[in-house]
Image (cartoon, rainbow, N blue to C red):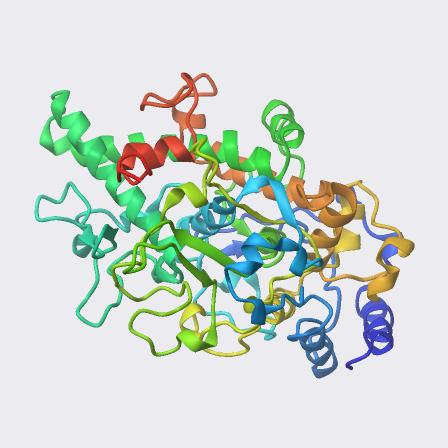
Length: 504
């Protein structure tokens, strides 16, 4: 199955047999109404659409081939050039283009959001599993339970003895998440220690909460109310960032505002509770994997000689090292802190971009360390894992989803060079749509609508969110560079992890 011809035969032949001809795809109105999905289970956004392929050995082989190292999706970054030159000389990797309108931090904030609303610990890759039978161990709400866990009573290990502030420790020069003696992070979601950037975000939210406690205590809020008031304050500002900064960046300002003004058309769990649809969890929201750079400048002066610390996101050479040369998590060392001026725009000219949303995935993601995989099991190619997840959830093709949404599928000519003209895996289709319609800057119409509607829907269906509890007229109250709004740079300043607070 290694050739384009064999992939083409598989996708258009086997796929058409299993799922039917895409051109005659069902419209949304023709789909049966979905039964209410419990909040602690996964569900479907398009329950009437059939799987794009049968989950058999032929399908597994073909999808594994599509996602293999050096294959169709590999950006073929010249890793021999080293982590610094791949940043300073992006022309060395012409397939893996920078996104001039996103900062490098967009990728990791998106990963942080994913870990706040979805965690599947039971389903197996390529083994068909009903989503409704699979437990989501995160709450399907943007409530920072990945930071707060079950709260001070249920998750006391995350908290100081006062059961109001969260635990935080030192990483040498700066903050680090709490760790056991073996280096394991003491946090609600272990995935928030997969890499140093996501771990740094976790630490920043811990510090933001603790400073909110001090603020409210100074305002006279009684101790028995301090935790909940501080959690609400930080959570609402976090939700504001999602709606007003993150979603416009990835889905586009127009679609975000259209959903807010005119409602959701496809993610409609009412009257039941909110849930995470597998079309989002297993495909559309994985667009962020395409934004990951092969390497990053972690900070400006982390090394012992005062020089910047650069590293590949993952590098096999880092395996077993106490202070790895790459950016994997699970380690504490003096240089393993984040200089946020690289990841978000503080106006000092130091910010760096992420990569475009397209069909070119950075080469290090084809060889993940097992520690970065929640199950600890191969395959270690992230694209292979994404594609095999389509078999787990029996996901429909991207063409069928686009037709059901009324957008019209990408044309044969647009997808022809890649051998998936009629029947593309939904994740691949979302990437192709972003590349061909949005030039990799933002998601295309189907991907943008799925992502935007799920995020906004989760907030609209959560009685504790700012959109429900305070309404669209609520405005942030914490200090910000621009009055009446609030962004990630403001949150990092509030947490005192920004460059100015560190004297950088």
